[in-house]
Length: 239
Image 1 (cartoon, rainbow, N blue to C red):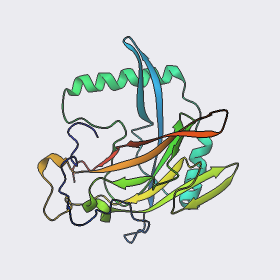
Image 2: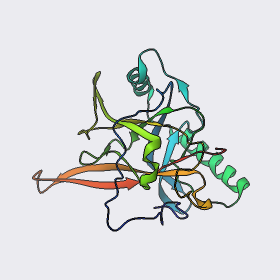
Image 3: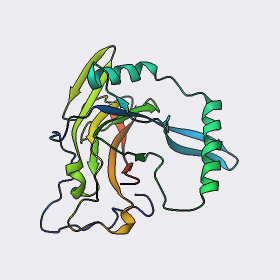
């Protein structure tokens, strides 16, 4: 959990278990636009040694109108265009990001996988690109909430497996799943009651549940994997 995380001390109840799963259904206005975020987690060389960093490709891309073929067509089109990142481009983006951070100065610590969203309901798609052994968890839903009060603003969670042209979409987790999508509706005001404190910065915390597959051990007899929880947030600046 990141420093200054708005949900680190969200109120909890000892008597009633909290439902943090993202809803499988969406009963709001049908979304007419989508936003795809391709995730890379990679090693970056620095003067102090190698660092592991997470980033979006094209992080400034705005939501786009859904194509005639719906979200399946949008996902297929995006998957076809994903190519390995070139090191030179990656380093150039890193320099730009550091320059922007220096000019902005200090402030609330944000995840590099935060999304800023405004306007109408939007289908958000996460695609895991690098490393190639990174998958969404086959044991638990790919996305869960940090604060159960946020659940009404989200729904329609689907896990997608796209292999050799075959498109498989399920509500439940899938093996070898690298794509998920859901609907997010920007709230007009923070959800309550009671209203969240000022330090919530008008954002909702999510948990992205992923797995790093590892080579088997003991001559192939023991399968190995590392389950990881990543915490992207959906921010609603200006709401």
